[in-house]
Length: 475
Ligand SMILES: [Zn+2]
Image (cartoon, rainbow, N blue to C red; front, top):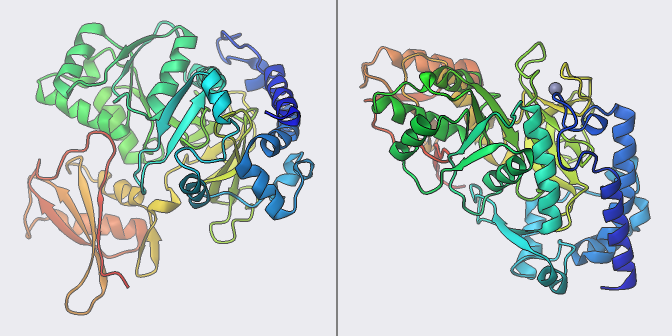
């Protein structure tokens, strides 16, 4: 490492340490760190500016990807030293990162750690889920994991988890950030944890009955699947010890009928994490106790460790306050995967008003219910699969599963959509056809063909739902 590289790294680390208040335990029942979680907007802005001013020299001196990008843009690190300067730096999207990794396998040059430093430090490998392309690989250093545990503990404290809880992790324990990040945070909080990888639904039902967890951690699809599995075994999920469903990996809190279905099934409150592998280690978005109140459903973002913005999907320029846009994250605390304006790409509206919980950290209103990559464009009408979910799950009596099939009609080549749902009154003459079609038309103004099939016909989703089949003739 050059002297400048080392100096800028140490300066950045010292600044992180300066603001790592309450590193080991909660200072308060309501907020883990009242100085950070309860900071005013001005205090948050000051922390972000101080961290940003040391992040950019650190990136320039330690990451070949960032140095090349600064040079290409004709910018010096000191040109981006405050929030106002950020817009000078064009957003970085996944394709730019993928190109960096392809040119410099296997880990890319965007990291700040050269091979000799990796070998001196512990690290752990993670991967994206690959729902939209080839999984991408990341590794996180020990410093990252320590900040990750701390920020996740702060977020789960806001969700009301305490050492009186027992969390059952119904996750695969593969190379995915969600389960491991939660696990690290819970260990810091002193909350009991049951790892539930490598088990089928029946075994997990046995664990719930026997060890009485108060929190289940899983994808929303799995929470539904597990609840149905328990019912098939003659057990009532709502009568178990479970009080909270802690979900991540897919949106659920923002989709009314899905949220209600899960909460009714388990007699439990749904809380949610939102994040992405690229900008870990971080809590990302998290639920506070005030969500579902007067301001509807939303997630907080942790602004002393990250900067969140929204940008216009076409111009990628910042959107005005209160306007919908795609999420962009700058994480200020990552050694292994620093991100300067990374386009996470989920639609939301940011709000900076004080929340009823006392936090001033930004809120994603309506949560994040649509990733730009998932947007369906049918004859110029754009909508998200989550909107179909909202329409279909609002109809009582339909099964949990549904499928969206996009195809091109043989006779005239027109692109059409078929929605397949389950109901005991199935077949071409089902009285429900018009009701389902009407609900979809009301939601997205698209006329869809409806096929109603017998219950238990569609494949059951366990981990993450894959409900869209696109068979359209490619132009
Ligand atoms: Zn709040």
